[in-house]
Amino acid sequence: MNAVLQIPGERVDVREPRIRLVPLAQIRLRTARRYLVKGLFPREGLTLVWGPPKSGKSFWMSSVAMHVALGWDYRGRRVQQGAVVYCAFEGQSGFEARVEAFRLRFLTEEHEPVPFYLQPATLDLVKDAGELIAAIRLNLSDTPPVLVVLDTLNRSLSGSESSDEDMAAYVRAADSIREAFACSVVVVHHCGHDHSRPRGHTSLTGAADAQLSVKRAAGDVVMVEVELAKDGPQGDVIASRLESVEVGFDEDGDVITSCVVVPVEGDAVPSSKPMRRLSDGAHNALRAFEEAIAELGEGAPNSNHIPRDATVVTLTAWRRYAYARGISTSDEERAKQQAFKRATEALIAAGRVAVWEQYAWRVA
Image (cartoon, rainbow, N blue to C red; front, side, top):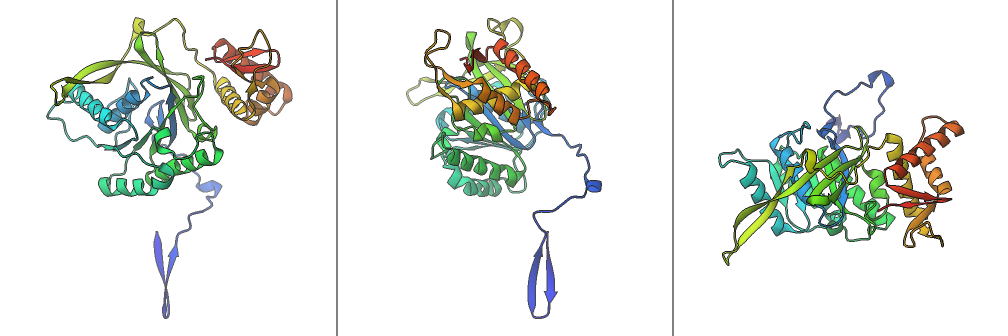
């Protein structure tokens, strides 16, 4: 809010300061809904959706985005309806077929206009974030988006995913979109070579308010797991499958097909390797492990018990990172030791991490 201070012979704008201090007596609990999709995406914040190529992550994310635009509950989870901007930085022609498949499968011809907007140009987000924000404001006018999807990070970053500076700049660009519209921003990203963590520098995962992994399981089932949710439960798993839909014919008269995402229930969910629900402490320890591996990881020593191609980190280093992340609410050394021990045992039992003597490594 701007006010004009009148001084004889001058006109001075007095702007409300951006930085302000709120006294304790004026701090009040906000009861507005904090979710965009309950248990999956925050109402405002940065979410990372990651997985290997061909895992179905883009199909799944676009399906959720459609539910948000339509205001439909997603798998029993409440949704806050609003405009969606989906930035398809790769596979644009395939995305058009995906939208047509959703339209044919779930919408009627009489359906009201859906506030879903595709941005099909490949951008350098660090340089083009301001232009993207301006385009959204121009096209959506007085209806700011509740969700902006950036799919994928790799095709919208001109620098290196492994560079702390380049990744930090990308996070700042994504944050500028979030701040401009007070919305939820989702980054769709690939995994590392061993499929155990998001690819690149840990500044991205460290900035995320939520993190979801996507994997293709037996029977072509797409498994989505909530790995991190700062304001909600972790460990929930959503099982889906891709159902083929004929959407039209090309110039040669051949059928064009795409897929829609449909739920998988009961016995159809693969059970050969059940996904364990991890505690908050185990998730915290896993994040600490990923940071330690990224910054201190080294080649495996000669051992019959450790895979030759594994990247390892010492338990001492992992413990230090876990303590720094607040593995325990107590400052007592014994309490922190016990919390780390429980978290480590849970991650080993869940098949996420393996340990031999003083070394720990990821399990694919």
